[in-house]
Amino acid sequence: MIPYGKQDISPADIEAVVQVLQSDYLTQGEQVPLFEHTVAAYCGAQYAVAVNSATSALHIACLALGLGKGGRLWTSPNTFVASANCALFCGATVDFVDIDSRTYNMCVEALEEKLHAAKKTHTLPDIVMPVHFAGQSCDMKRIHELSVEYGFKIIEDASHAIGGKYLGSPIGGGEYSDITVFSFHPVKIVTTGEGGMATTNQQPLAEKMQLLRSHGVTREPHLMTQSSSDLTPLEGAWVYQQVGLGFNYRMTEMQAALGISQMQRLEHFIQIRTKFAKHYNTALIGLPLALPYQTLESDSSFHLYPVLIQTDQISRTRAEVFNALREHGIGVNVHYIPVHTQPYYQKMGFAQGDFPVAEAYYRQTISIPVFHAMTEQDQETVIKVLQQVLV
Image (cartoon, rainbow, N blue to C red; front, top):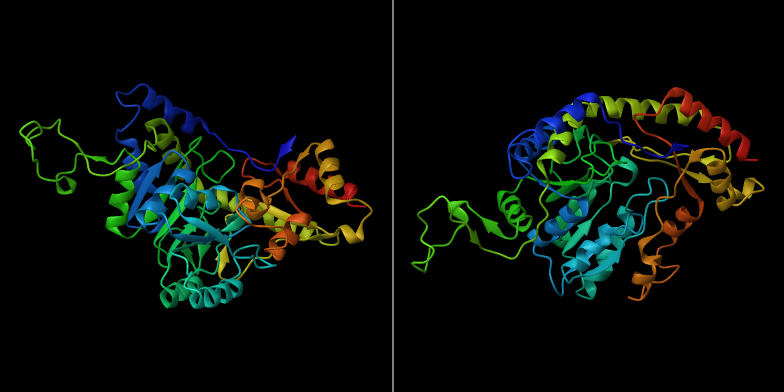
């Protein structure tokens, strides 16, 4: 089976993890801060906060921006459920903005129209969370301009997009958002097994997220309050204070060491994925498929290569094509079932037909294999099987 995505673990990656296992610290040592510095430096951000998953990063990013009961977050329906769930964790409400029919990212025109209507009813969002689907950046400059006009904060869900660029700069630099979140799940570009990272250029947000990931506890003197009890004087190295309510979202030293090692090959990973995507772009012409559209403003990291099956041109349904590909050893998948169509969200009042572009995309899409450990022979096999199946 050729999977749609897969990690690439090198001997250097293994050695980096082994060194940590042989060290004194398996958690809260030197590797996590070094990994944070590595990612921040790569992206051009001032701060980075590592956590145990991108979901955790989205959660604390929302909390750091003040999202709570009565708050509102808008995101894309074409994403994994975590993008929306993080608002519910905070007690806030969720709504969605339909996608662009070419990029499958949040449609800026639909966002502007929805904002205009929400202003009239005093229901503007506190946070808008664009999702960089498949590794291609949303139109962040225009979204940022709308944030200035309508007063919302921005979290970039860049779970797919480390190594990608927007307007020539690495995604995660924070020029057009408050916080950017990356995922290091095994099928992503860089992996730490499980893991996530939030980057920002705002020190108060970084400090808030650092507190939230570790129980709300700090040993930093400038974050502590003055002692009001003889029982806890601020005079010993053992002293810590809980100054807020947080979680145990910490990343381990082993994960961070793996991430640091993986980051050394990030540019190589992106080059390989781009090469495979470009070959698909030419080799699949003529088949009953709609191929991914790439804007001039964005250099995708190609976490996914989604194609749309033109079922009106063939004798098979999308499900039949999907099953036939898997039977031939091609581990295709579908990204994503629109969040608003999930039973949990339908109980909130969302329904089929609410976001028709996302739903139309979903009915046709299949993600075919693209990953940096794939071989040219693997790709030729994928192409050959597609040619056989799409009849």
